[in-house]
Length: 383
Image (cartoon, rainbow, N blue to C red; front, side, top):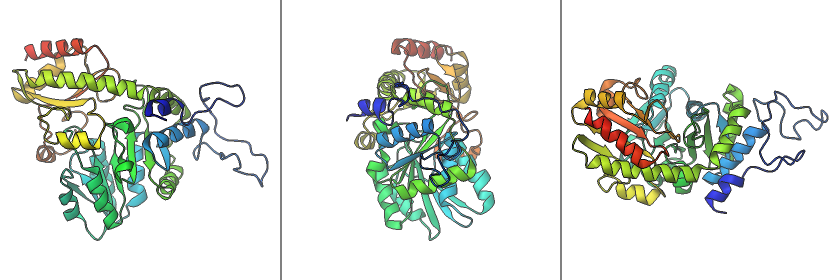
């Protein structure tokens, strides 16, 4: 079946009791067993370990990513944490993309580093850098592509080949493109990681995370951490996300078309210093964007002439766009990473990887593109 058919039907069957077309919300703590000997025959004993509503979402995401199985979590950062906790012990080393979500950087440098785990933040856009960063104690490679917020890309197949040669897992944060546009497991990655808060939900209604594993072995390890730590997704969140996923392809196509039009408008605007969007021919990795993904996504960033103060003026006065710290929703959002999503990244590190004080990140929604361009044009006029 095609992606659009699978996003609606896979993982979901009519309720056997009533015939309800929607998966019920199994808001329950425990499950009555038929007997001691048949304990767990149903597959459920306690909702920290498994829940039927959450399981339906896991099965749907597994199908869309082409994995062996999926484990869902309470947040995207809980999913990242589970990956770290699964593969990293004191004295181990992890290679991470030099541009990642600020929460991932914070977890690595402020939490795991306290317990003797070493991290190298590497420019993974060049696979040779990954190979050179490998150590005898390297146990995990984590890449984020497109990277948040600079949109720098990593060649997933090239890095996955290096990871396989070294015998270590490669996890890819696939939040920005989702399996509709990019499927890391098909390119050799071992794990595809998501903040389901973003495009899977699509409506600013929930927070959640997921790790899709290429093998049952990897999934079992991830699921063990879920059960041990209790960082579970609630059935209500799973139910809402199940509804959001049904329109993922249609939403992402519309949002991406809007983003492309806005990027072309900004690229020609006299008050814009620079604009970055993978769909533009001027994007340095445009060919890689075309070769490893089926679309360019709905994220872009730009800098206004006049620096940080000009960018803040624009964000403070713009209409239609909401100044908010999320992405992927049907509402267009505008964000200042330095003070919002990447505030915990040290200034020197931000500057090293290209997150400037004046960078304006845009998550493009489904409004009429003419209204979005008019709003940007009016705000730029006030700079």
